[in-house]
Image 1 (cartoon, helix red, strand yellow):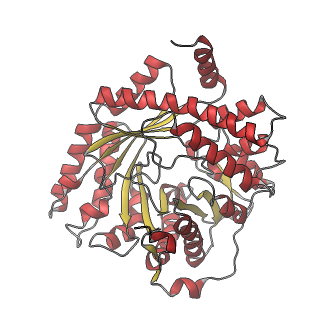
Image 2 (cartoon, one colour):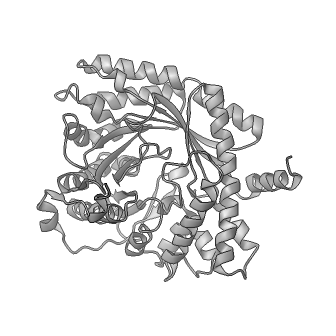
Image 3 (tube, one colour):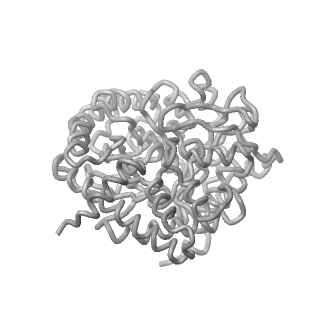
Length: 452
């Protein structure tokens, strides 16, 4: 029997606490589109995406209307394009990015992810060319997002790829400097990348996934903060319980939307990603949750412990509410997309060093961080290597999405607009890791990899 209190509570969450479904993401396999003729492959890709996702946006909007649940984004993820481009390695892979962009425009989605390569153990036929083309592809398209997986717990870290990705991030910023360096904001470098992630910019459709699938990403930092605000004197055990109960309610809503979208689109339901994904909107901040726990500012000593509690409680509550939980699932800490993080960074309470410590216990990594435009590629590569090491050793996903702000210095602001928000240029450690990065090779997998 439906409880009237639960209905009213959900309405309150939606109306006043920024509760929403952040994304319905349709994953589409492109393996049957592989062709030695790249133009024919691009035509197949465009046709298949439009055939499967033609009603995705319409369906999402109808579900939102029928249930009164805000569904912010409708997105598509596809098989890593490097696998498709591998059939014609001597041809320019950017044409695939244009095909994806055309399909995104036709279907009306917000983003399409999968201009990606998986190179954690080495480069395959299409990998190197695709990675080289990322700056141009992101500069010439509007909706395409890119990701590269450079390490796993099982394989170790491909340091040749790490070096290359530092250079690619710099080139992507330079290629889009007239657009506020938006290129690197659509590029994620992963360790242990999940194959069913519905969130951008890191979403791609893994080779172990079905031909087509629906994945849903929920959100709700404002709801969690509001719940904690009602128990200001509770001890930390009770704080964890409050977060668990709240995460359960949020995830149940996500499960409902996922199953309904699956039914209406006649596509299998994949997973619910129960991540707390912030936005620049007031009252929708992960940083403010941490401050509600008792920190004067996010970034203060104790921030990592608070985030560990939050991340664990979100997972425990959410996993009881859905038949299939996946993706990243936990708490995100993207600086430019979180009003509390932005404020903390501006006042100097939150530094990149502290953010790196926080990534050891949260869902992703160093996300949407603006750095000085003159930061050397070797330093960016070293940042990627540090994050990959945390992910590799701890058997978790870590990622780097940093944006060199061309022409800007520490303290300046870079504004992307929309969901990507704006961020202050943060100071980076300028001591050189050049010789370390130049060594290349692979960092061997840790002992945790030998679990068989």
